[in-house]
Each structure stands twice: as C-alpha cells, then as structure tokens.
Length: 448
Ligand SMILES: Cc1ncc(COP(=O)(O)O)c(C=O)c1O
Image 1 (cartoon, rainbow, N blue to C red):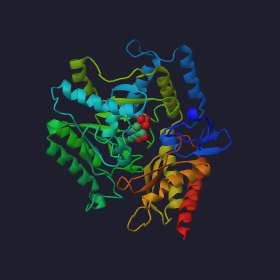
Image 2: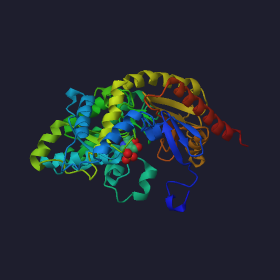
Image 3: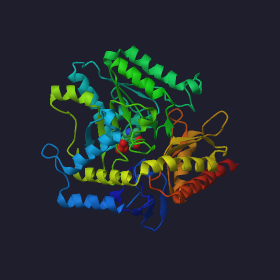
Image 4: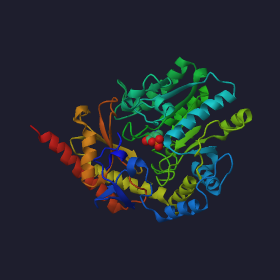
C-alpha cells in the first residue's frame, strides 16, 4: 500500500478488498472471509446482489442525484412509501428526511426535536437525556449523547451537556438492583432526572432499543420501553429510538421497538436501509411533530447537500424490495432462533462466556474471566481485539468491541449476518467463532 493512501484508521497491514458475493468477501490475495457481522451490522443482503446493483446502475444512467430543493424523484417517493408502510399505518411515523449516515440520522432527530419545541414556544427545552454504554454516532451532537467513554474522551469539553443514565442491562444491573427490577429502576431513574432538571428544560430522551456496539447487543427487559413511553408522554419529553444498528429488520421486525409494542416520536435508521450498497440513513418522525413545525418554520431546518440522494434512495428501494419479496424478516425471526441455538450449543458452557443474548440476526456474546462473579478480563489484554484478529485470520468477520462493563473493562462480540445467509453459512460462522475464541482464550490461559 502506498503511503499516500495510508491513514490513522487504515493501517498498512489491512488486506485489500477485491470483491464480495453473498455472505463472502475476497481480498486481492485470494483469501475468503465469511461475513458474520455484516461489517458493523450493515450488509443485510450480503454482497454483490445483482438486483440491487442493477437498480443503482439504472438510476445512475438517468441521474445520480436530484438536489432536494430543486426536485423530488421516484426513488425518494417510493422509499418514503416503503418506510411509512414498514413503520405501520397506525404508528404516525409518516415524516422523514433521508441522509447519508447513522450519525446524520441521529443528528437530524436531535435537531428536529429542538425545532419542534421551539415551534411550540418551548425554547427552554434544550437538554437531552441518554444512557451510559450507548452509541449514537461520531458527529458532535450524536457523540454528546453517546455513553461510550473512549470515543468521547478526546472531545470532552466541547460536547453539549447531556444527562447519561445507567445502562439498562439485566446481566449487569445497576448496583443493588435485582435483574427483575432493572426495567422499573431504570425507568424511575429517567423520571427522576426529568424532575431534577425540570421537564420544561428537557427536549428528548434518546436510546437504543437494543444496544449495539457500546453494550454488546443488550435488549431492554420487558416493560421498560412502555414505561419510558408513558413518562415521556406525561412530561412532554420526546422519545427518540436510535435504530441505526438494531432496526431495518435486524431484530426480525422492521422497527426493533415493535417488539415492545411501543412507537417513538422520532427514530433514526441507517445501516440496513440500503444494506451498505450506498450510504443512506433516515430520521423518521411523527406527523404530530410535523404540524407545528411546518406551521411555524415552513419545513425542517436540517439537511445536507446529499439529503435524499437519488441513487442512494434507489438502492434503498431495491434492498427493501428484496427483503419484502423474499420474506426475509420472517426468515430472520425463524433463523435467528436457529443461530441463537447454534451459538448457545457451541459456546454457552465455555468458562469464558458469560452471556449470549439478542434477537433475530443481532446476537451478542459477552466474555468474562469468571462466570460466577462476572468479572471481565483485564482490559490491558485487549481481548476483543485479539478475537477480532484471530477470527479474521481464520476467515471470519465478526464485530468484537470493548468497554461494555464500565467504559473500560469488558469484551464482547457481535454476530449480525446477512438476512439471506443460508443455514450452512450460519453453521460456518458459529464453527469459526468457536474455534477462534478457543485459540485466543485457551492460548492465553495456558501461558505460564
Ligand atoms: C446505534 C447507532 N447509532 C448511530 C450510529 C452512527 O452511524 P454511522 O457510523 O453510520 O454514522 C451507529 C454506528 O454504529 C450506531 O450503532
């Protein structure tokens, strides 16, 4: 690799990607990798899907992008219809702006919440409440509401103030709280924080319905989201569901919060919307927010040059079309149970596996040094990075990360295959993960 294309985030030792087909990726040296995590839970249809590629090409042959203040387009309108239907006719989630990343989707949700309150004359509602061990993105606003210590550290002091509440995690409940009381305790904490700040100062509560990278796939316990909905309703605080990672079908429902029977006021989606074929995200929000906002300002005061990018929307239409036609959400629900069983059979009895959790094709495996005390490994071991590297060397792409216990300690692995991965491919993912974990951890344990 030439020095010119090297950068801090792309060390020279990375192999060069050649092409992908289905659940497999190939580098320029001819090595093959199975995509066990869709990169970071992105590639929901796998790679090289000819139907999606053809749809993008057809759009590019006509026009790449009709700028949003000049034109609307068929792909934009079709995708709007698809997302409305996917959110459910009764959800009220009718309005949306398409953007180019998850961070932009979150950023847009935060700004739409602020604009809504301003439109209603409640300009005092500026504060966001979020949770520790959460990840909402790398732009300054999204980072400010993210509870991911290491990713925040270099920027502390320049981030807008936000309240970060306890993570909602039954495997690691807040101190002194029993697992069965986590939902109630954490919902009460939100209520108390709103009361402490004064509801008239709080704009919105943002959370991941199933926490991804910062927690290692942590679904909230039953009842939590309903209590949050009720608290938000009562206090006029908007509820923002960040479904960038867990949404667009990853958990088996198009909206992850559907599982909890809850509709948010705003929702961010991205990764699975166009499946990584082109960069695409969306901030989706309720008609109820749109009305005062358009009456006061005439429209949204957020957006970018590439918002509603025509070719990206065409990719989204094609990806969502395949998912619908092939019944892939049913498949994710059904094969998600198969995948969970596989991983449990392969790993649940290992002394270094503390918890295996998740829904659909979104599964987290938490590694612990002691299953009884749940003590994590010494973070200086960088276990998650070793697992990532060994898996990669063994031809498996998975998504290990660290810091899920307290921001520093903790190691976990996310498994998030393409929705159309065959069962034999799920078997291969489980086999390779089991072997890689054994090589890394049993190797470490055997050291004198
Ligand atoms: C829940 C969640 N929100 C937001 C983001 C930011 O998305 P992006 O990296 O596309 O900006 C991510 C990325 O992983 C995410 O997992």
